[in-house]
Length: 346
Image (cartoon, rainbow, N blue to C red; front, side, top):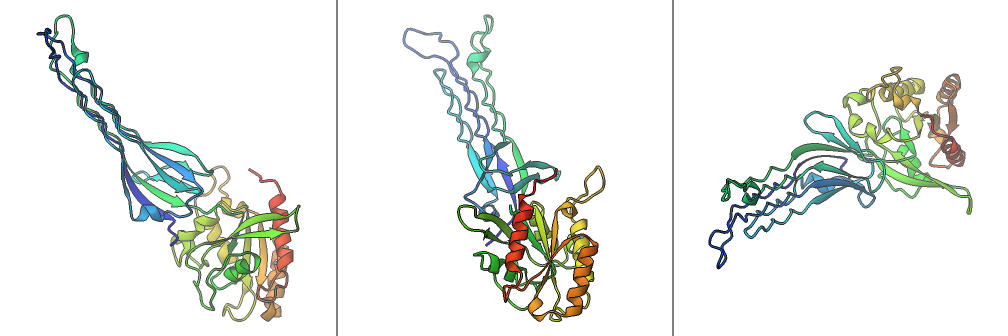
């Protein structure tokens, strides 16, 4: 099961209490204070790893608590520190404060490790309160409480290319044709209910190139507001470098105007997420985009011609493909590889 959202609560360990004790030894009738300090509470860390690719292990286990420090003991013995714990998340996970919504950390690479809850300090034993005029102190400190926080985890897939388009535009069929991914394919909308990743290779060894393609559930008008499966999966193409906009040019879709379909999906992409502060531009629309007319083996020639003309006016690269017959597939793969060789503009 693919789980890309989770809420967790973490509690660092409390510090152990300081001890109140006095030396009791033979021939030492008035032994001084000997209460040891409490141990420090364990911390809670979060670390990114490539061993996980979903947040399912947090969905059913949302509470995580580090060990508290042991109390101090007599004979100036300090209590043992509590054990810290490390929570592992997939690369691509964003960590948000559940109360404020503030981004705490974005795990973009493997083995990133941050402290998310600090353990409490151990209390001081009564040995620390002895003075020349107060030689038998009974004062001692309680351990400090460990930090407690609620967080929201959000996973965004790490892929080079994102496939977007209306439901049933042919995204799943395409990714199954160009990679080893085998998503569910059927002739009805929203067959794809979770993102799929596929590795695409072009060329021959030793100069073979590869890149990762993400197929997300189809978008509909109002997706950025949550219609269909919109906001649930739009974020998975935020980190892609290139978008392939698939538009069905057959009559099977039941939609008469492919250009209108193209505009609707682009509007949803532009409306998702906050704009950049400097120019009001949306990062999603700054990505290079390739327009792909799909199902050309059963295409309506008028629709195909209209979409191609619109792509030329927009100065967008255009490809006509059929994932069933394989027409245009190799050309599209090489075009994507070429786009990914281009430097990333920041």
